[in-house]
Image (cartoon, rainbow over all chains, first blue to last red; front, side):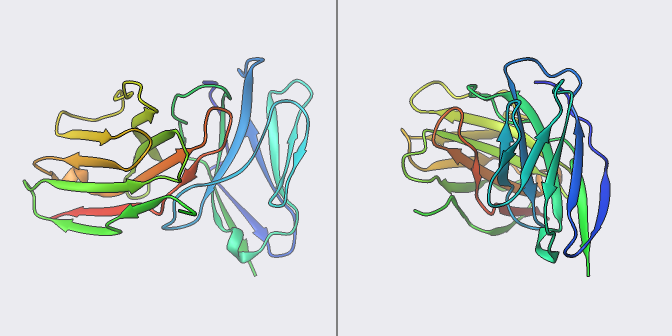
Length: 111
Length: 113
């Protein structure tokens, strides 16, 4: 799996957009970008994933650069409940191997 | 069930005792994973089950750790002769198949005293 780099922590004001970056410069053509988050004392939660096109669902948007070497997870209107550790993971979609979770980005949403 | 269920939610055990942790995956999910998360750390992969195939045990830290799963049902993670460094939250995840997202349980918090 390609290695990812995320900032260790970020702050965001409630109601504003939270933009979480992820670098994955060694990504290969068949690897997807997955985002998970872990709210304190809960199990990780799947957010979104994509290959090369931008993706949007009810939780977030995923913007992937044209060269696919980086991506941004966007929470359009952050709430206090979005405070969590966000993990960016790159891997082949059709693979049984376990996800490798790094340290992620600790997002703090402030009132 | 609607989600991945793990039991017990909390377990305190004395050093040297054996413990058994249980995971009920979402019905129909063929893949099941166990992870460990120590305080303030990321998730460590332990073991992976896919249907009736031989499990991927490459993440198990020692031979004191073992896990079983019968078919696509319940899985148990057993830790023998527990040590203080085994204290962690043990998380179970299942998914419908390759290409689908993972659903995690709330974990079992194990404390070895």
